[in-house]
Length: 286
Image (cartoon, rainbow, N blue to C red; front, side, top):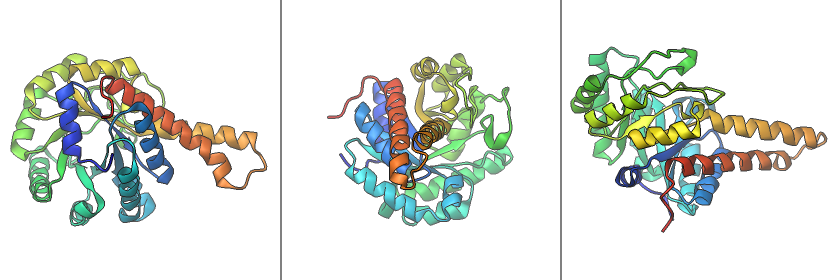
């Protein structure tokens, strides 16, 4: 297998009635864990870099290059995606080298802007991204929990969503259906009827953010209702940190990071495999 285009991976999920798992990458350990977990599950996946993760590292290029090489060597088809990018300067910086780094998609997030401004900004990014073959996801209204704000009542209106997609030309739409970012338990209740109505009204794949807070059975039901991309971030970090704490407790004299991060990376890989199996139970590698 090798680096894959998001557009092709999403098309496969749509054709099979499944979803594509997308995992937030903060480090080389994260990227390697996603590759290992996807291979174990026999499923494709996306390596996602958020604007926050890029800010933490200081620049997008080093981690993008690492993701490209890991994807190229992976036993599973892996794509590279940018998540929740609000900075137009960052969009332009990455698109200028998208082919070099294998970036197949990005999520441009102008949801904080008034509707008309969101449409105009998103439409402009879509036009630029499509010139270089990059698939674009967008968001209509903030998903609950972003930046610490808890908005359990936020929901995406099917009619407005259809109008937004038509006006912007986006390839995928992140929808607010009951999930929240940064949840540490899996108690989110999704509006499955709304997902089905959105899937019927919107002619592009639907994306579920905040999937770390959703139980496996509910994720599977959401996929059956029409979700085609599932984003996971916090759950990876919980698995990593928990395993790391355990390894350090077991090895109080350890000073070599390889001794105590190995199990943490493995814990993330196990979690990746589990999520992949939930959303794409019928897909296997050729």
